[in-house]
Length: 256
Ligand SMILES: NC(=O)c1ccc[n+]([C@@H]2O[C@H](COP(=O)([O-])OP(=O)(O)OC[C@H]3O[C@@H](n4cnc5c(N)ncnc54)[C@H](O)[C@@H]3O)[C@@H](O)[C@H]2O)c1
Image 1 (tube, rainbow, N blue to C red):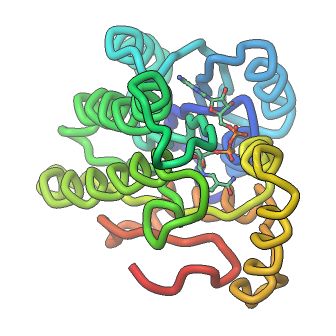
Image 2 (tube, rainbow, N blue to C red):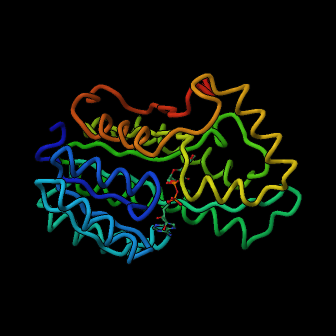
């Protein structure tokens, strides 16, 4: 067990990569408090994880775009865990909006969760890690690194997550806090939603592009592929790694 004794708070634990990560962290022996806004789904994942793990696994409601709520939930969660070693921030939303159609509501919908949510959760985690060190895992996207058709606000938000991650890695290294980002390309409800919002023609084009660009299979990976990288980043095996982006995308993006 690579995470025995690790105390972890997570966001976005009700679905997709987050749900797979709750299960993966539990299997590795961690104590986990998983948060999300989809309470029923979040509780169901935690119930399954509790059967696999040794550490306590619990669920709490937390909207990452609300700073007061984030601070309150982190206070309660960290008090329950008795400290904080790892914070994995997987909450996310997506909506395809053409660049020429941007408006305040669409910008806020995406930026509030990805950009503000990353900053609020990271700052809350810092308060508990500054005396002990720890690992913060953020989620960026190839849309924020090399671009992706049809999701420019999301891509801009993920570019901001990347910039934030690198900057706080510089600031918080002195506290032995590591801050890294993962850029996944794996099949989840969010990935499906992105494809569902495309025209048939656009989706056919994207599929052909994936075939050409992804050497490992020409398509998206599995949620476990990204959860396994979260185990590595949460564990002491990555103790000299900070400010990095690990792409879990079958080789789609090879530049940073
Ligand atoms: N799936 C991919 O290929 C892919 C690619 C690039 C980046 N990502 C990123 O990976 C992360 C996980 O995505 P996923 O694909 O598993 O998506 P998902 O939709 O399956 O899960 C996202 C979770 O975030 C939760 N969430 C949404 N708004 C929230 C809020 N305000 N507060 C708290 N939780 C909230 C949702 O309820 C959901 O459980 C996201 O940050 C996403 O942007 C995913």
